[in-house]
Amino acid sequence: MNDKTIVVMPARNAEATVEKTVRDLPEGACDEIILVDDCSRDRTVEIAERLGLTVICHEENRGYGANQKTCLDAALAHGADYVVMIHPDYQYDPRLVPYVVGFLRMGICDVVLGNRIRTRRQAIGSGMPLVKYAANRFLTIVENTLLGQNLGEWHTGYRAYARKVVETIPYHRNSDDFVFDSQFLAQAVHFGFEIGDVPVPCRYMAEASSINLRRSTRYGMETLWLLARYWLHRLRLARCDLFEPEVPS
Figure 1: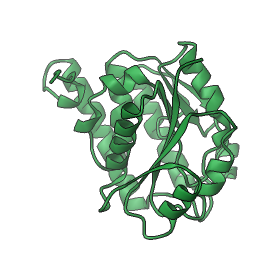
Figure 2: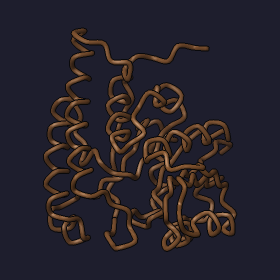
Figure 3: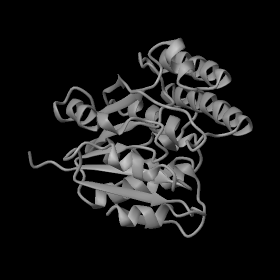
Figure 4: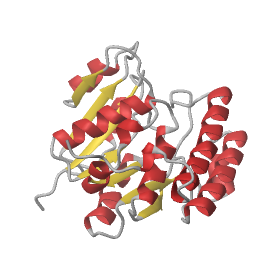
């Protein structure tokens, strides 16, 4: 195979977990790991460079969505045919990379998501807070209904994309905050890409990144507003530039 798989890691203050995340990647699972550091205050960059990762640093904290924009830009610039996003906080299992890429390589899916919620007992048993579990279930049901999908969850940080997805979606118009994730998937639906998911073990721990209740609430409201904008655009009642194709320069 001559195709190229690049793992991207949006990072902030991940010194305690980045090495464990990288060590769990199967040998030969990817051709390059690009870590984008969003102005960490710890040794994340030092450790990533010691591990031989390609490291890109933001000089100021620009936000989770802005970090992903840099990740995707870099992956395209480095010739990725497949892009896998793994958070370096060791919450998601990196061992699945060859499998999620396999679905892309075979053309079964254009986007593959890691589904943390196979059963209620397993999700909560892994440490997922009950309120976040409930919010995840509610939003996932609403998104599946309004976007015509049947995904196990919409709010995972474990994602894999074929190159054509990243080249097509106008992600630079998206938020620099957490709702970037919801926007990207809604855009993938709008542009007709095939989305699937696979079960992924996860772990919640003190070192794993997590947003607080206030920001989670804001994220949920922004996701619901995104769905309204999606349908207003589809019904041609109000134009939304998130769902307009890029104009070639």
